[in-house]
Each structure stands twice: as C-alpha cells, then as structure tokens.
Picture 1: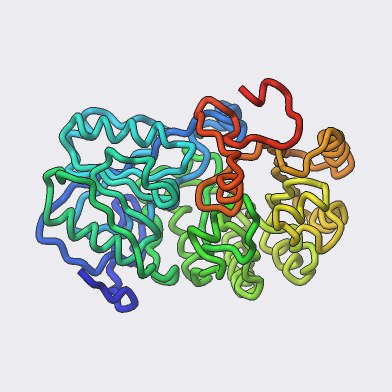
Picture 2 (picture 1 turned 120 degrees about the vertical axis):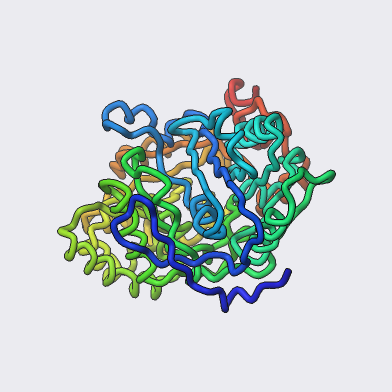
Length: 430
C-alpha cells in the first residue's frame, strides 16, 4: 500500500479522562476489522541514570520518563481500534492483558533487549502476534529473530503498511515480516503522544520531542545514521499542545526535551522559545525545562537569554573528555570552539546547571587521563556526571573502525564490547 503522507487527514481524538478535545494526526488507513492493541514498554535494568534510588522520596513516582516513541505509535493507530499501554517500569503486563490483546507491540533500546525478547515469549505463549519497533530493532534487526513483525525506522509509510497488515491478518506469520519506513512522516504531522493512556505523576520527569537528527558526526554516536544529519522539527504550536496534553494527565514539575541536540538548528530553537515563554507566563511558570545541547550553545547569548526567560534550568552536555586531542580524535570538535571550562561558566551564568557525560576507554587515553578527569570535575564544579566505559554501537563510525581493526568483543558479560588500546584495570577486561 502506498500512502501520500502529506495529505493525511486530521482526526479528532477525545481522551476519556480529558476535559477538552485534542486534535491528533492518525494513519490515513481506514480499517475493516476491530483490533485490540497492547503496547508495552519494557523495564529498564537498574542503573544510576534511571534515578530509581530517588523514587521513594517522590510519592507516586515509579519510572524515569514516559516513552515517547511507543506513545506516538499508540496515538497514530486507527481510532476504531482499542489501545492499552503498559510501562513495565511501573507495573508488569499480566496474563489477562496478553489474553485481552489481538496484537502486542513493543519498543525499546539496546539496553532493554533481554526484556523486549522476554515480552515476545510471553505474547507467543498466549498465541498473540508480536511487533517490535524503535531504535534498537531499527539499528539491529538481527537482535529480534523471534518477533513476528519488525517495524524498522521512524513513523511513516512502513507504519501504514504494518497497520494494514494487522487489520487483514491475526494469525502469526510463518516467517518474520519486515516493514521499513522509506518515506518518513514529517514531524509537523506527528500526533500528540497518547498521554491519556498514562498518569504523568508516575514519572520522575515528563518529556517532549521538538526535533529529530543532529548536524554533527561524533564517532561513537548512531543518531546521524538512524535519524539524519539535518534536524527535522515540529512546529512550536505542536510543542505547546503537547505541554497542555501532559498537564491534563498529571501535575508537571519538569519537562525534558529529549532532542538529540536542542540547538541542532538554532534558528528553529529561536522560533520555539517565544512560544515557551508565552506558555510559561500564561500558566504561571509551572514547570522547569531541561534539554541536551552541545557546549557551543555558550556562544549564543541571545538564545541563552531566551532559554533563561523560558525557565530552562538544566542542560545535559556530552563533554565526553576534557582532553582536546581526544575530542578531535572522536570527531567532537564542536566542544573545542571555546575552552570547555569557560563554556560551562557561561551556561551557569544564565542560571542553567550543567550536567555531563564522560567516556573512559578512548584510544587516546593515557595513564594520566583519570587524574585529568578528576581535576576537571573538581575545577568545573559540575554537580553530576555519568562516567561510562566506551561501548561501540552498531551503525556508527566507531563500530566500523573497530570491526576493521578486529577490536570488537561479542561477550554480553563484559561492561564494554571493545578491546582498548590503553592499559586498563583487570576488572574491566572480564
């Protein structure tokens, strides 16, 4: 089936627990059959980054952030179908949930691969057809050989073909079927995620996506190959509508922009910020904003002034390493456009706390690297850092280079999948 995505009709979806109707974009495909769709987001393995240790201090909080991807899929499905959403970080799907469903849809990241495949097993035990989509399967379809259907890529023509198939077939296929998006649905036509299916109060942070893609090509990052080098944007009106929809689902305290780089397109960010400022003023500044951005944001004072007025309070910057030669070696020269410590000071001066990620295990590491990182932490006064061992992701320049050098190690019991050049502690090499 070929669908002209630019001419998709707008439909009205009224959430059962909403006081107002919200306009949302759905598939153009009109189904012939009723279907019950169970959307499941798998549990994360516990780590510092999920902040699970803080949940008991926060009342009803049970999970980190709502999963944008699968909530968008839930909103895009035909309005004639019944949809349930279960985040297994909050509660596990039950046997009754699987029995209720005609189709089980799962989405997640590489770190959730064991949990994703376990959900597939449970769904098959109940005799249900299974679908997996999202970043992990799009990057590595071979990770999911037992799923009935693979949805590869973003929302688009592949999604419509998958929906048509599910409308026409309920029996599990004899062989795995793949639906790959060739024509992406423009972000301007994305539906508002199905926030009516969850309670926002159960989450540590709320989140919103403004853009997709990143203009940089850091060696270790798979974002450019999955989502492109030219950032694509939603409209400011879409973002504001999503903020309103989230407020209907619970009490917002903070909203994190999950964009790969909030300032990947600075002109677009400049157009969005007045809308965020206006929204905050109209609603009495009810929330704090946070985002991910490159350190060279510090060179844009007008943008920083507007972010401060919109009440951005935290920026995650992938500093990776304080060593200039190392940054150049991993193609992260955007961190070198001004001294790193100076950039942090500038961002702090606008009232924004900088948190960061650091990578250990780069080819340029020396016996002195750890001491330099410790000194950098002391001098920069960054209050929170995640220090990670280098892990090569498929579909990255780093993966291809290490594969050619014979330095990839396929052992899931290891913390890192690379053979480092630098001398490392014995514990890492196990």
